[in-house]
Length: 205
Image (cartoon, rainbow, N blue to C red; front, side):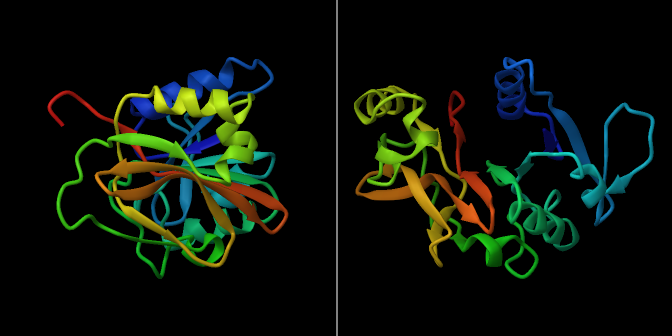
């Protein structure tokens, strides 16, 4: 499973460990190289095209920021997502530009908070989330609801709006009287896409 990101932070290390608990899966870390290519850290090989790195992949995980998803790499990711699966992970360090992002394919629009949102006051399953395999976590709606509600507060980098019907919010984070999509999933062509718009809170955040 290729994992494209500029930094190997706690969120991605945790994801990688979870994936590789299933010994039939292996994570291959990719870092951006220039505007279109990628490289494997420590491999000693030169950069390769995004398309080449995805040639034998069934799913791709990509950090959703402008350094990872340049216009050139976004084209390859959109082509891949129409036939396979993509999981896009926050937090967004530098939001991709509207013109050069995967927005046309997945129907996402975003804007920054007018003021710092701080940690969430709760996480809730949406109606779609109560019936989706990702948000149900292998159980039923009641068990999944309890599991999600038991999580510590989260932060979301941006306010996401969905258009076009490709993705449906499965989880929302509550900030006072407002809710922001936290986990979204859907189909693009013959492939599947999931977007995580969140990160854990650190002390003092």
